[in-house]
Length: 237
Image (tube, rainbow, N blue to C red; front, top):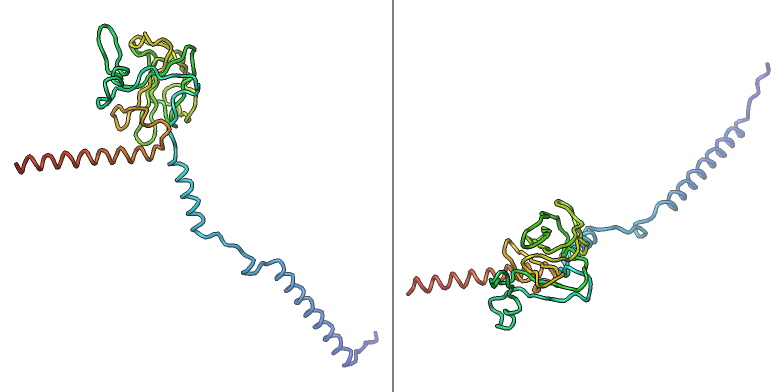
């Protein structure tokens, strides 16, 4: 078989053409990579301050929770108020219950309406007790954050059970009657406890819970300081 030999110039030309094609391919690949990858100026970074701000906003929203009234019907009226030792005589008279020839200081508030009305939870919480009481009627107690417990008494119907998780404004039952407040007819007897002590519910309705908690803590501190000062004065004398 006859062998063909390429001239030296043809071989050099072939190498040049191959080198040129390789260079052009590398150039186009580089351009495409630059087009697909954004520059530093095009990139937007999410820094920790933005995340922190979002977390702060969530905390503010969580803290700014106002306690609602235990009913939604605007026609519901206050029948009896919480007994306040510092109130005037007229207010105290409206906070007294009469049962079996005995006057009783009201430890909550009584809300009434001619017709049965829905009773709702004043805050998010967990049902800790559902029971029948001879004097108070059907009772539901709910534990909330910030060491609050709300008690709903004189219910004719109950739509929750113990250990249920409830949301603020959720219907937990309906108003009814009981023995101790029989003269009030259809009503809800509502009590509120803070750190184990019964408190006036009217001072917490429509108030931001974090604010009322801080105020309560401040009041307790002031009372303790006053007591300490009094004891100091007695020791000095």
